[in-house]
Length: 184
Image 1: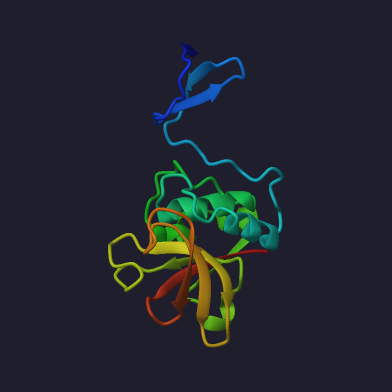
Image 2 (image 1 turned 135 degrees about the vertical axis):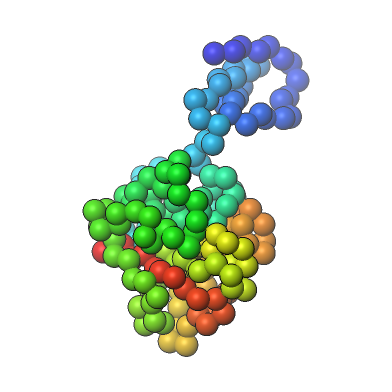
């Protein structure tokens, strides 16, 4: 632990250091073991999809994990008792459905889903090379709502609004959907 004394406000935080200030003006800085700090989980981790979806919606405007789309889906899966995705060595959003043993965590993966197989609360993984995911990694997010024509409202990160959780309106047929992951 590193103790610093200051009568001025601390205006800059360094990655990998947790800083707290006591009422007496003492600043305490603790070096964290892991420079990719996990965002705070909800106070009581929801076990149902609706609760986890509401918890994710409350994160709008914030950066989860590293600001990448993968970090958002990892945070959401963790809320539902899914696999530990961050630090796993996997990095392609398009492959999230096949990179983990979802069944052992109580999830079902549907590859190349049809519109009627996509539901609110599903993790959605778009294939690489489309309008939503023009690079090689693909893209991922969470479905908030979907209608019978495939018009979706999603929560995503690292899309048009930057590296923060934000709401988007997507159409089913714009970019191929490689998989959806549904909590049973």
